[in-house]
Image 1 (cartoon, rainbow, N blue to C red):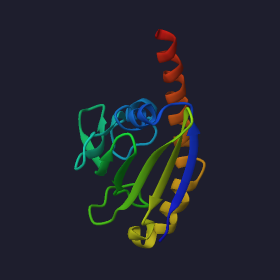
Image 2 (cartoon, rainbow, N blue to C red; image 1 turned 180 degrees about the vertical axis):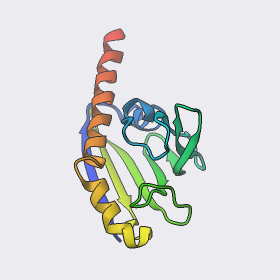
Image 3 (cartoon, rainbow, N blue to C red; image 1 turned 90 degrees about the horizontal axis):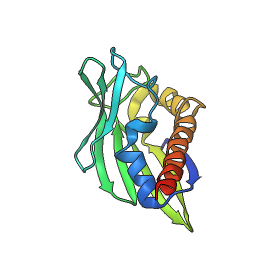
Image 4 (cartoon, helix red, strand yellow; image 1 turned 180 degrees about the horizontal axis):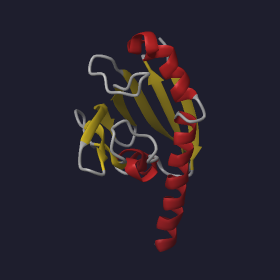
Length: 159
C-alpha cells in the first residue's frame, strides 16, 4: 500500500482538535488550494458519514473533492480524495485520508494518513510526492495547528 503519514501534537483537547479540523475546516484551509476555476470562497467537510467534502467558489459553484467515509468525533474522520495528479476530480479514482486525534495529557496527537495512493493509477507517485511535499500535508497541518492554537488561546482568554 502506498501512503503518506504525518503527525503533529497540538495544544488542545481531542474534542477541540477534531472540531477545528472538521467543522472549522475552512478557517485553516488556504485559499490557494482549490481545483475549480473560480476563486475559493469556502472549503467544507459536511459533519456526518456520507457527507460531502467540497469547495464553493466565489460565484456560488461547487466542486467535489471527496466524501466522508467515517465521522467519529472526537476520535477520527476518514475522507475520500478523488483528486488526481492533474488536480481534477476523478469519480473512479480515489485514495483515503484518515485523521485521528489521540489525547496525550493536556495535548492531542493528530495523525494524518493519506493511503491507497496506488488507486490513482499512473499518477500515483506524483500524487504521493505532491501531498508529502512542503506545499502538501506538512504545511497544511502547520496552518491547522496555527489556527487551532490561536483560537484555543483566544477562547481561554474570553472565559
